[in-house]
Image (cartoon, rainbow, N blue to C red; front, top):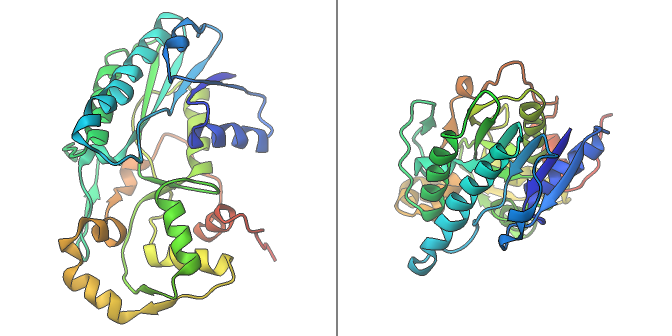
Length: 293
């Protein structure tokens, strides 16, 4: 199997390659820069699949960069998929996002996203990703399989963005609010395993992607701290204040609100994730050796 990954330095792409190496899979992975138009001269016909992960993300959205989101996240995605189809590539896997729903989640209330949940993106990122989904879906055929993966927050060793910020916080903060919440996340190796499965089986469709179990933010922070030989005091007082006032602030809702995918809607044919517990995934994310004794 030969796969072309867009984005030379993309975290998901590089971790996909690493996962294949770790599993000793006889696959070939090449990387493609899409920062300029040179990719248009690349011969796609030698590839079985394109794994499209390059995107504009983790940037502060401003009115002046709105067009960039649509140019990269929507238009480039469609152009790549169109070229892949015309040159005989069998599968196109697109990394989309939970942001297409425009939901943050609220503290003390359940927000459950299912296949019936209406998309209402509120950010340039979410809107451009949704429009990309809609455009590439028109290319689906018996010979060209389009897989769209709506992922929540990714975490894993060296992961940029939200997990990196949470990990840094867990290594420094003396205390953390005691709040019981649930959030759907995806461990990077689980994501890579799913992509392998979809490519190998030439699957197509829209997939809601998450870990087998949902995660409590406090539990994640505590687990990160343990792996760094720290202990964080779990504050009932801070938890109470956040439960009372937290829903007024989107940044707090993003950390402590409840937002999960419906479990039944995340099942994919006969695919199963490897038997890896949440605690073990955090240990690997912090690059700590797993103790199996």
